[in-house]
Image (tube, rainbow, N blue to C red; front, side):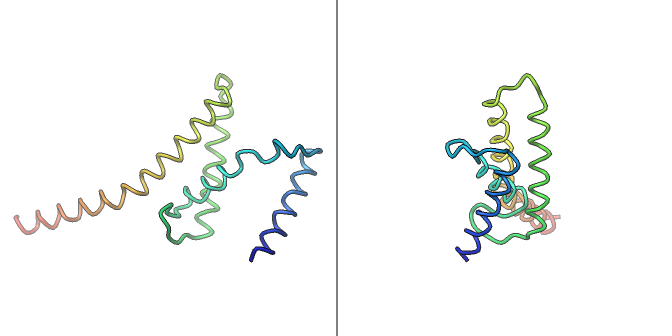
Length: 118
């Protein structure tokens, strides 16, 4: 498995170097880990552990890329503020993932209580 990962990283690095035209080891690929995490989280994979689907991660990547293009297209925002907004999107999605099941269970128990009482 690690060999396949290494091979894919090598291919992706080669494609990235061809795309940019040069490689600077100190700054090439910075913040790409945030894109990977965001794609997985927006795709529906729980950060506490769990299973997900590749199609969900694909649509998560498309969603995050769209959000990123919207944020970057605002000329008045500095790169630091752009990264802050991207982080806020991730925090909101993680909060929905963690609080969503709790709220859903609370509503279910309230419905059961209402049926019993009413």
